Image (cartoon, rainbow, N blue to C red; front, side, top):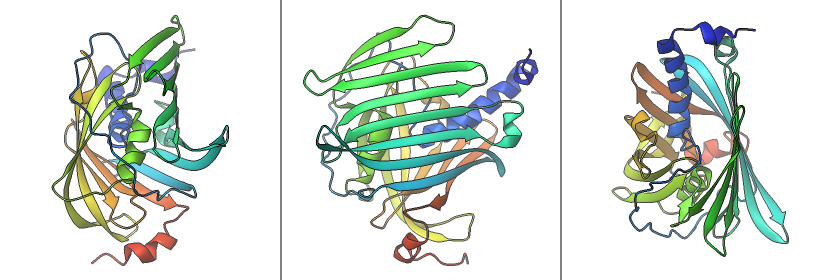
Length: 295
């Protein structure tokens, strides 16, 4: 059977792929794959100490991705406190899928799961399940806190399984990096630095806290937020940093410190990822965030 997507002109396939990757990149869950040889020596990464745990009791958030106003995908995030061998951890699962309309020509069902220490936020386990049309890839990474090494197992349909070992220089998976950023002070004018990986490639992630400003959501709610400008630099010979052009993330300036809106410019327009439901929640947080009608 020939898939409809197999008949599509390559520029359209590239556009659809880029739309999803742009949404993923600005959530810092970029096109993550396992590391290959030739890593550049990264600068010494700061070791950040968590100060806040706004997801302490768990949270669920739903984001909608649009391209030039057209719905293209959703991402649902579940953060849950768990106990493993008597020790507290957090498990974060992201389920991302294309919209029903887009499913007809390019269907994506990706799941990303990260487990990290409940106090230090040190990484423990990272799993990325990719289901994109006929493309099937599973990546699992385990961090050994004793040896400070990541062991990465990667399986792709139609190819031989591969195993990579990564010496960690305070290297984080992208989900853990996001939650660590939410757990420390954000000060206008400062820049946070993270060494992140998701599999085949590693990146230097810079998060510049540009300013604090009100941001209006599609619902009409107005949220006081930090505008954070991300920048990705490849730390491996190859990487996908060039796929992210201009981008911005708005993180609520209240105790929740939750991403409420994300934007990325791509070669044919703009992709927005916006918080549309927050079970922990968008209503209870409304008072703390001083939500009000748009002017």
